Amino acid sequence: MIVAVGGGKGGVGKTTVALNLARELGAVVVDGDLATGDLPSFEGPTLHDVLAGRADPDDAVVEHGAVPVLSSGRSLAGVRASLLSELPRVLHRLERERGRVVVDCPAGLARDVGYPLHAATVAVLVTIPERAAIVDAVRTRALARDLGTPVGTIVINRASDDGIAGIADRLESKLGTGVATLAERPTIAVAAERDRPVRDAYPTCPSVDSFASIASTLETATEE
Image (tube, rainbow, N blue to C red; front, top):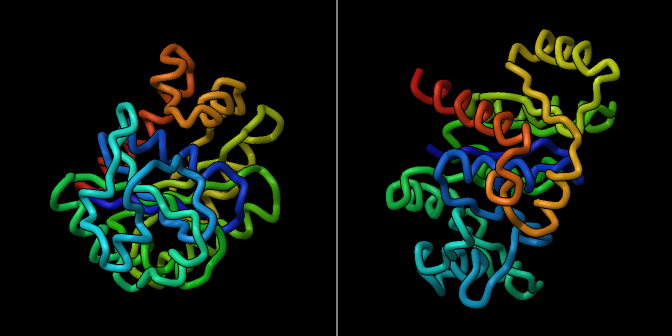
């Protein structure tokens, strides 16, 4: 299973959702943002090196606590050397070797989003309860549909109690896709700052159950 975590707009929490879903699914998480990756970086080869043919995908994966991570590089030269069209092949190879893969997609709707979306078994769209972010999520959903990739769920991140149920209902009705909500909690933000899943940083946080529920939804969707 390959899960693409996208949403269009930057800053909505895609990386946080990707890292936590990888933890819940027992998956390797791949930073698919070649230019401005947000997942932790390490010494050694990166996705830039893999896409340039300089490293084997599995050799570039680092065991980061309970979550294996394939980081993006941090250099402009690395971006230029990367062959983006190789990304689907890399993801499918990791799927064969690791079983489950979660890809943190870049923001926007350029072709660098299309490659991981097209390779994915299922997509997760992350948004926040703001009009611009929801519009971008709707556009990303249209792109996924054009590429033939089903959307397993839409995640409304940083949700408060004020009108969120109505927003979720309208979004689900408009798109015909299940909607999950993640309450805004300081524990999620602190865990993200430490590059750790919430389950490992704050195991009693209610958000652990929220991420587990989203992961279960994806497992069910890919079994159908």
